[in-house]
Length: 303
Image 1 (cartoon, helix red, strand yellow):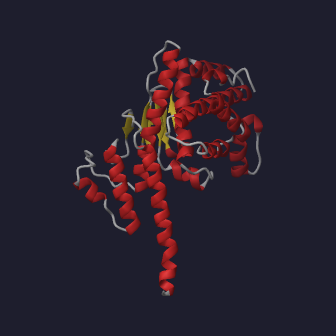
Image 2: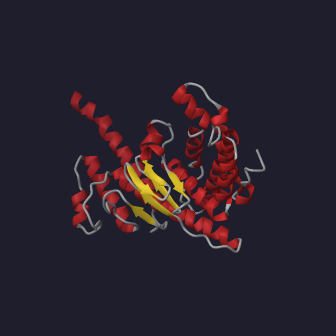
C-alpha cells in the first residue's frame, strides 16, 4: 500500500463518517411534519421542500459530496426540487432548512396543545430565512444580530449561517443546539401571545437602564424555559433523543452574557446584562425540560 493511499484514508474516512452522521439525522427527521409557515427570502426557492423529496434530495447531494461530485443538477432534473428561481445551496444549508421546518412544526404542535388546554388559540409564527440582511416590521434585520423575534409582525428571523457561528465562535454545535435557538425565539412569540412581552416592554420604557436590563434578563430566561418545555415534547415525539439535550445545554451556556462579555472584552459588567448569565440560562432551560410545564417558567417572581 502506497504512502499516498495512507494519506487519503483519513480524508475518505472523515467524509464517510460525516455522511453517516447526516444520514442518521435524516432518518430521525423522517416521519416528522415540516412546517409551511416559512418565508424563504434567500434569493429564491432554493430548497427541496418538505417530506420525502427533501430526504431523497439531501441524500443525493451528500453522496455527491462524499465522492466530490456536484449532484444538485440531478436532483433538479428528477423533479425533486422545483424552485421558481435557481439557487445553489450547500448540503448543510439544505439540511438546516429541513431541520428548521421540522423544529418549527414541532413547536407549533407543542404550543397549540398548551393553548388549547387553556381555552385559547395559538397563532403560528412565521419563520423567515434570509441571508445577510432583510426588512422587518421592527427595522432592518442583519445576520450580525443573530436570530431574533419581531413582535410587530409575529415572525422569527434566521440567517442559517448562524449555525457556523454557533459552532466556530460559541462552541455549540449540533442539530439540537440549533433547534434550541429556534425554540427560544418561538418562546418570545408565546410571550407575545400571552401578553407578557408587550407588558414587559412597556415597563422597560418607564424604567432606568439598570431596571430595564433586569426585565430583559427575566424575559430572555423565560424564553429559555419555554424552549425547555418544547424540548421535553420533542424528546417524547422522537424528534430528539435523550442525551441530545446536552448540546442544547451547551448552546444555552454559550450565549450567557457573562461568557460573551468575557470573550469579547475580557471582563463582565453585570448591570449591562440583558439575557442572563450562562448558569441562569442553563438553569431555566433545564427547569422547562424537566417540568414540561410553562407555568413553572415564571422568571418574574422567581430567581
